[in-house]
Image (tube, rainbow over all chains, first blue to last red; front, side, top):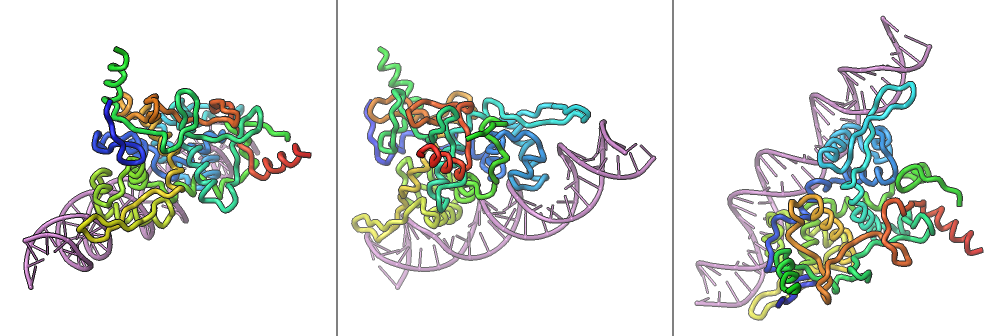
Length: 167
Length: 167
DNA sequence: CTTCTGACTTGATGATCCCATAGCCAGACC
DNA sequence: GGTCTGGCTATGGGATCATCAAGTCAGAAG
């Protein structure tokens, strides 16, 4: 598989830039309110009023954004009932929503490093040990990878190369 | 350090939600065009017209967004000169911009999984081996962590706990 | 039957993002 | 001197995102 790398990551000329997963992801969750609602869901918030208060947005925005996240499949709307109260709905993360955790944590980690005068108000730790958690690109064999260690290939090329290698 | 965990990640009541790194990060790079420009920078793009064409935005938007990213410190504007041409400027990632890679890759990984019918057009691989790259939360000792393995503590608590442990 | 509360919905207004089109400007080339 | 090109800047308009304020609606409590 002959391939030259012009830039940091790759040979740009070998793929098109439409149909990009990053763009599609940004179309779904590219607003401040959506990301902060998802953050709150990680923190354990499930109820409408708690979302409104803790995210610091208006109820109108919260209603619109929650509806949109449910439609996208990131959150699920579930009935619940406290004793002596009527049925209400709570918002819980789907698997799809849980799998956004790396992206949200990476953003938090970056913000802690570069946008906070003294390291950010919260720390993510391993529950068992209390030691801090980092999030980085990682090879199959478990090594931490930097920008220079990475390359991007078009999926078609990659599949072809695997098939070739398998022969 | 006594602490109960109500939600998936943590005890919500022990910190405030203003001053959030995720919110600050979204204020800086929370637009589709900004993220896609950063993606392009990872791919090796440096010149204005290439950004415009490959991201698929108008030159007006590109100019505004690039200016904003330079002001934020994510990109740096550098003069360059091709032989027989006048001096122009190229946009290159700063360290701060490079460190956004985990977040962008995590988003791409998520989009590939959930927003693409057949896995996305591109694959990120380790340059040396060609094996695919994943991005996940990781403990200090190198273990992959899931949502259930994580906890969030307020930084004040964490520092206090470390001091206590050190005694 | 009225009140209250949790969970929205609606409406008005403003900021921001994007697109499309057009114009500008500095130099290399003729 | 005129043209071309790369790299912007300016203007106008539509969509989305946000805020604030007000209204709705179901049912438990009084």
